[in-house]
Image 1 (cartoon, rainbow, N blue to C red):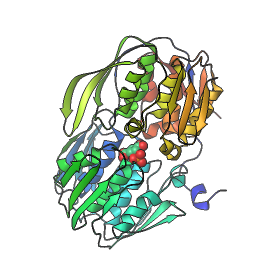
Image 2 (image 1 turned 30 degrees about the vertical axis):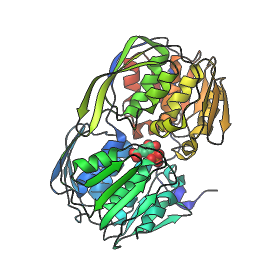
Image 3 (image 1 turned 90 degrees about the vertical axis):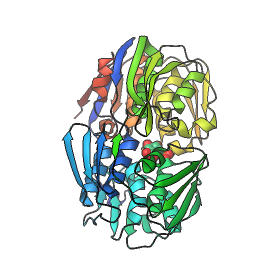
Image 4 (image 1 turned 45 degrees about the vertical axis):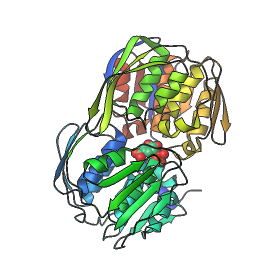
Length: 449
Ligand code: S3P
């Protein structure tokens, strides 16, 4: 069934493909581009702050540029004086202006959900739309708590576009999230900046805390106690300097690749190692990986380190549920590690993977089966039996992390991989192929007719 608004949305199946030939050894050092979650948040908070903010290390990916363009459409002055540096002249808490045109979030679920919270509190109406993949993603989960704060938001049968009616007086809530989602927590906190009194959000499990750290750096009165966050509104944010570390979720592909095929030490420099993001390190260590965090330092509000990885033979494990939200974007890469491990790996409690940029449980199982790996689909995860991976043609279903996961599988696959529909890698990791080639991968991208 094709919804007319989805058919009209930006983004179709791209003709871009990867060809990844088998390699045996990876070596060297690399850096990955800036963190996607932090880049989105920095633009939004800077845009409503008083005064100016310089963002260093900004991720120039399609997702983050969608947020940048939307902030400009909302009247915020943004300069890009040099690559990865963004200067934002804050419009102040009440200085945003309505956009006559819908705001296009393209492929970015984070942008759509965070903007829902921010825009619910403004005086003007807004419409948020996106590409074909984003138009299929669940949005009632963000609309429901915002409505509890007095927001007026319509979804289309639970999905985008989001139609947000401005001019509402928001009030604080004490909200228990039914799903562990940093996007939902952040949307509520952004709306809470405009509500008079203390808003509290309790999560079922700890999720990434970038919003909390950054809100504090911009001067918000915020308190964190385990799974509960409280924010005092109304707030006045003050512009500051934001250092964006390398994205752990981009580094993840090379952490797995190096664990499978490093010759000597593979080093990844300047990576964000916020403990709410590094669940993959803990999971891989339990599988026998050798991953060291060195030069640990603080990069503004976030911890940063260099990672050193050596090759090890991995063994299958049962992944503890508490680690799932801390590794939520890393499962495509982890499933490749599991396919190369001895024995069985069991992931459950990960039903959120079904509503990411693709159904990552079904799509990863399909791809692994194509390569001769036994992967059994469960309602909330996968059971994978490690084995020998062959080559073949993989459909990424337009999901950037699926495309990159199978690209790095070429560190162990015995035959060439052709990965279809990979253009969306640009949503999170511009330059992925070049960086992969730098450490020894034989990956090329090409357009098929
Ligand atoms: C993100 C949170 C996660 C993650 C997404 C980025 C964020 O989503 O999958 O890529 O920046 O808050 P959920 O919080 O919905 O799990």
